[in-house]
Image (cartoon, rainbow, N blue to C red; front, side, top):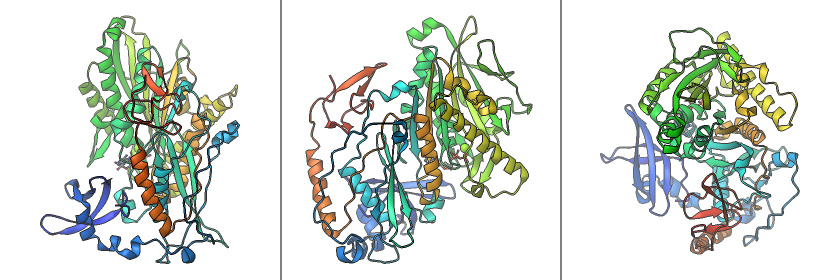
Length: 559
Ligand SMILES: Nc1ncnc2c1ncn2[C@@H]1O[C@H](COP(=O)(O)OP(=O)(O)OP(=O)(O)O)[C@@H](O)[C@H]1O
Ligand SMILES: [Mg+2]
């Protein structure tokens, strides 16, 4: 099973004897089952296969030459291979400063050139690193207090390799260690030395892997914010990332053929949660009504997506409560999820789309779906939730159009995202001047950042492939800045060189680890807003067992 990886292309045999290529989507090592997916004329197909069947149809992957790691003396750049795993250094708490919080720890691993059949290629090294990560999880140093307290939460979602990337034999260079750590593997070429694989580490409030569904992302991102609007607060959840990284997939729903399945979108899940909370006796006492609006910012102009026939740009104005308001924006009163789904379908259909090298259906505008709670009698705004699907950040090379309209679009998108970043920087510096006025996007989002009772969640979406690694690093650095993390990048155990001997040690170590995974006591916790959190790492304790980087594994219920 170790020779297989999610995203890898393998041959599969159909019941009629026909064989074809398919992509691995899941690996179940306990049951020796490999889930695969492939595309046919009528859509995506998938099935679960026993490992034995995969071995039968893919002998080249399991041939001994590929399995046996290289001999230490020939292949390793370090002259003295170590026979055993070195004990891990204890994480040393270090004094924190703002600049340290942004630093990414880099641990180079000797990389061996793939042209030599005896030497492992980048993919093998990345897989080897992942195995290390299971045995010796990363540890965040200086983690203190509830991460939620800052009012801004930053999560990262990694999408799977898409069929185009799989066909191009792209290597997945992002390793995640849930709940909150992420490693980017980078190939560094040197003039006089062997190339090396560097690892850059990040820590966020939560990371979601390629198998996580939109519902899973919703549970940890938008869902906690909905209670906040019922307490009279302002909430914003926005998706940010490179073009084609999955912002629209996350916020607006999975694209199935020509249509978008809005039922599976964070927009719809948020609305459905609002309708379920409004039924609760406590909310019923407040006598609130729900209204929805949906608009886009395209080339510095605001357009109402719920009035697709009317392509008149709308004005933005500060109201008497000093809040930014889009004038004449349609706000549809809604009383159930079905009505919201109809609105979302109308809005998505009206949205400006284009094409980039990374995405056939690229959003060329920032879309904002708002759920507004109003007092049913006075009609005053009680709480507001803005869900934002930003247009993709893109480099000029990602956009192959020489059309002047497309170039203007791209320039406007990049400018607005840059200004959003400027505002975030200024807020981070506690600057007296924050340049919100400089573009429509920051004007619209102003109240989400500096209002009195605001909570914000950023979902940074990233592509896993090596060819996207620079854009991915840009997104992660942007996300880091938004977070103003209270924790340092995780500590990475030093990587011993990969040898045949070491592979055996790893095998036995893994067995021991599995046996040792017994409850080791009560995990210390605290409760905030009715949710239990681990006091050591601040991750929510929703179900057992809990794996805390400080405490280890606890199967016992918290007191
Ligand atoms: N988590 C995911 N799982 C499966 N497929 C995904 C995932 N995220 C994105 N995709 C697929 O990747 C493609 C691009 O996604 P999407 O349109 O959401 O990107 P985007 O970030 O909105 O790009 P742009 O900025 O260009 O609008 C789509 O075909 C989508 O279905
Ligand atoms: Mg999009």
